[in-house]
Every structure is written in structure tokens, then in C-alpha cells.
Image (cartoon, rainbow, N blue to C red; front, top):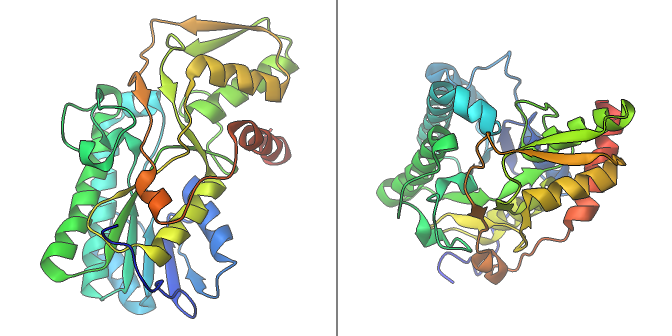
Length: 317
């Protein structure tokens, strides 16, 4: 396979900056990297605004990490993406531009950029292979976020082509797990539904409202599986193409809602609000390239939902 390393990239005794360490992805990566013999460096948002080009450059010049994992991003569900398109486009473009450019200038050994499955066309052939990128129109409900993420992938490709930088990109499917944003309005579908089901159980509600028709199909990747996949990519891949990360399984939103209700213990009726947008009808990624590199997901959706709900009970509710 093109880009597969014969000799694994050595992470031992390196300094790794996790940009976005307090987010869902960043927190899981930090936990996974604790098993590697490397030094993790982080900086909080109130100390460094990643939209500040000069500030980012100065901080990187001072810290000089060998590896950068670019997980920082403005993220959200359909509501947030639909109501804040300018913020999603601007913030994400500026963050990735500042970090990728500065990473080249300080000559980091390796950078890993995270994309999103929304980069693929709304009606892409399923399961989506990496070559589906830019072959058709995007899903309108998250177009701004998708455009920003596509720009980040292409920027990594461009710096690799022009300067020989070892910049790679990973494209995970829909993520969930401990540390997510449990907001019924602005959160992703799993934490949003989990909060609604939990409150419904506590208040003995007879119904649970779910956005859309319930028919769209989605693939869900447990966050700690993602973190393990990213470390695997850092060690074993150096190529121009982004690499999909998924499970190979998909579930309708209706099936997902039923699973969440089972985990939470909510016994009311599911009511689907068809006046709300569904988003893309189907989003399943082809995971074959990552499988060729020797990695497959380990956590089932049922197991991951149970772990996520336990974390929610212990830390949020």
C-alpha cells in the first residue's frame, strides 16, 4: 500500500503537541499517548488563541514539538452548523492554517490533521472511499465545516508536495464517547439524545422527540478506538492521501435512538420530527486502507454507549 512505512515512525522520546487537548478527540489522544514513551505538551485556550497567527508561531518556536496532532476545531451538530456557518468556516480555517504553516516553519517531524466524514459529497457512493472527495456537492447542513476540513486536508497535501513535509490526514467517521458535549441542542446526535433520554427517564416523560425521520444511516466510532487508530497511523503511515477511520457498521438514527433508550432505561415513545432536516441519507466510510495498515476497531456500539452513559452519570448529570 502506498504510504505504508516499512519501519515504524519512532515516537519514543519525542515531544508531542495535542492541539485541542480538552476536546473529545484531544482528551482521548492524551490518554492513549500515556502508553507511549513521549512527552505531551498542551496549552489552554485562555493562554493561546489558536486563531492568533503570531501567537501560535511564537509558542511553537518556544516549545519546538517533534509531532503535532491537530485535533483543535469548532465542532457541533446540525443545529450549530446550520445557525453558525460563518463561525464554523472562519474559525476552523484560521486554526488549521496557523498551525500547519507554523509546523512547516519550525520543521516538525510529523503532523497529523483530523478531517471529518462530512467532507464527502452528500450523495457519495457507499461505503465512501477516499477518492470520493470533491466528486459532488456537499451536504448543505454542514457545508461550512466540511469546506474548512477539506482545506485542511489539501493544505497538508500541498505542504507535502511542495516542501516534503511529513504531514498526514485522518478522516474519522462520527465520533462519540467520554468527554463529549452533552447538549441537547448543540451537541452531536449521541450525547444530545442521551441527555434527552436521561431527563425523560427522570421526569417520567411519555415521549422522546428525535430530529428528522429516523431513516438516515450513520456509522459511529468510539473515541478511544479513534485515539488508538491515530497513534497507529502516526507510526505506520506517511502518504499524500487522507485515511478513513471507521467501523464498517452503520445504524439508522431510529436504531441508534432505540439503543440509547435501552442503555439509559427510558421507556417512552420515540417521536420523529420530520419538519427538521435529516442531513445526508447515508454516511459509511470504507475502512480498507486502514485495515491494510493493520488496524480495525474493537468497541461495539452497544459497549461504547454503555461506557459513555456511565461517564455522563459520573461527570455531567
